Length: 198
Image 1 (spheres, one colour):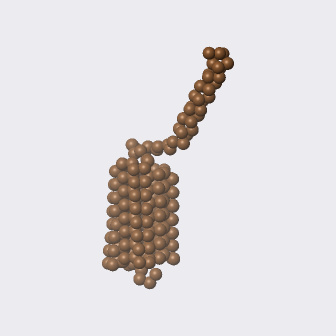
Image 2 (cartoon, helix red, strand yellow):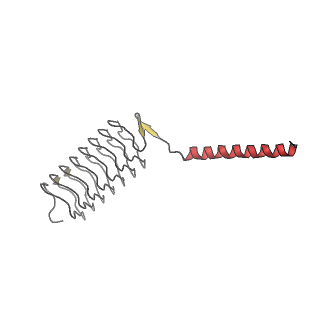
Image 3 (tube, one colour):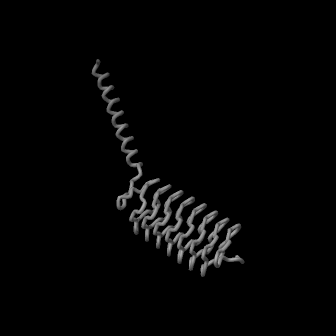
């Protein structure tokens, strides 16, 4: 083979290697960084029942479908996190900061939401049955078709919240801020203190 042909082949091989290396580096930079807290890998559909995530920084994380059943998330930062379809039954969510939390279809049955701040949260078709929402803030939250069966909603900030077709059967509802709060088509049978003149 002529020297010029060898040189051309070497240049092509070098260019191909450089391109492959650059592509691998670009893919590595795009790969999401997985955060691990107390052994819990925080990614979609993670299985972390009973995890200790107190005061954890979960801001903006994609936590779709995670299982945090019975987990301790007291004081956790959930601002703008995606928890669609997540399971938090029996979890401790005391004092969580969940501004603009996206959690349609989330299950929080029997969870503790005392002093939780879920301002502008999207909780469509969520199940909050049996939760303790004492002192919580659902200001401007969207609670369409959400289940609050037997929940305790006491001293909560519900200003501008939308309880569209929500289920408040057997709930305890007392001393809440209800400025511009709406309850169209909501079920309130057996609810103690639910508004009748909103």
